[in-house]
Length: 608
Image 1 (cartoon, rainbow, N blue to C red):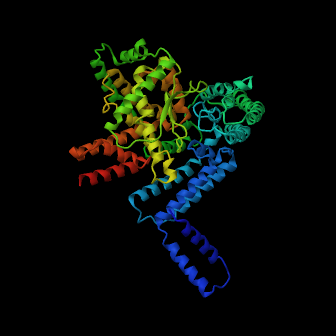
Image 2: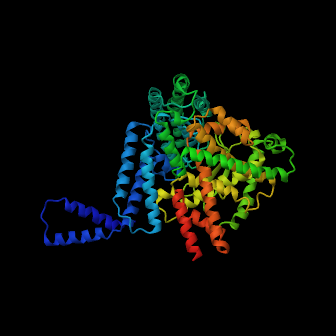
């Protein structure tokens, strides 16, 4: 990082250079010294300063990001991030920082500094490329939508803090901005209708009830009232009364009307224009290029849709063969399809209650915590907890998800477990899902990344989807090393999870590149995996809502597993699983090509 004194000298020198006043001898000597100081700033230091400036400006542009990572300076701000002005500002911001790093001579950088440079440059290029596509015209879907995001923040159980009067006032300021953003969303969707860029009907049909869930008659039944019903004792009675009055007015007269207007627009105006005969972005104007961008953004590769489709089918066939081995171990007499039916519907695999499911997952934690030191010598400082997905979004939420802790560890990370429709959440899915979302999956990878002292902040909080989700899926395979798959049914669960990610390669590309219908996707799932209807439907519609995201898991896992096999083969007795995991984790999330280069360098160093 450039030291403050050198920054000051740089500014002084620039001001002096712009002056028309003649210099005295003393002034000339000072200017000469300043020029020498400036030239002594290394390219690495210049880049460090660029990264620092970028991240601070990014938090100003994206104050919700600041809140999620525990930076509380912007907790009262909520820009209209769907507006043309904001998108123009964002484009200029990304371009300016791309220009800055392009002007740096990187020929002498160390491996670590060069990696940061390559990631930063690629991120800016991908961001600018992404801004050329009309994402803002389809801002609402059933999986990620701003209405649900604001509700989670306002519930008092998510990233938005509610510990002081200032915290409550900060969220009140954000609530005042909700109508502006919802209005912009409606304007954007109207433009999308005019341009033929609209969501599939089935996604909006699922999003409408999510929004309706917040339209309560009694303000005290609103999820936005929950922080008021549990105010800290440290807030005085007088202040509590004032906050209650403020929140009652804001929720009644600002928030709920905005939700009602958004719901009415979607149901009455937008829904009739949604698509019923196509389901992917590949069928939208410019959709083929749009989807290829989403592939590259999510996999950090240049693979094409056709290549990924073939990889998926090959992996499905391979995993089916391994499942037939499980059939033999369990003495199951029948076809693979009949085995799927048994695993999906037999009562022994269905939790008796939501609480029983939650307790079972929580109980697994102690076993995992005891055994992970066999494979790791680096651990996160942050704690985590297992929590149910909220009722208002559980029907469309995935089986599990992870929310990182803030950097000050003022709250734990959360593994959200979906307990909706227990028949579709079999007991044999437990171990693989836990390993993926909690330890040693997302909780290890994301928390360790945020805790690395020597990473620029843009990397501490960056997300390379193929790496992040690839690590999560790779972590599922570690159940073998941890002795957690001795039960053949739990091992079947791991295979089923891997199979599911392989099916995603086929179905995601099927929807968005090959024009598959919703029913074609469901049929492929039912034919090739043990899956209940509720999960198949939610997953199929998730793929429609998030083009390319589902590709990241398997593509990333295949690369990490390939690198481990290569290290084991080339290092032989010198292979150390703890060292391998450290080298994969110690630089945080990186594009797959950079991860491959790094591991191969490590193998060479280890051999010598």
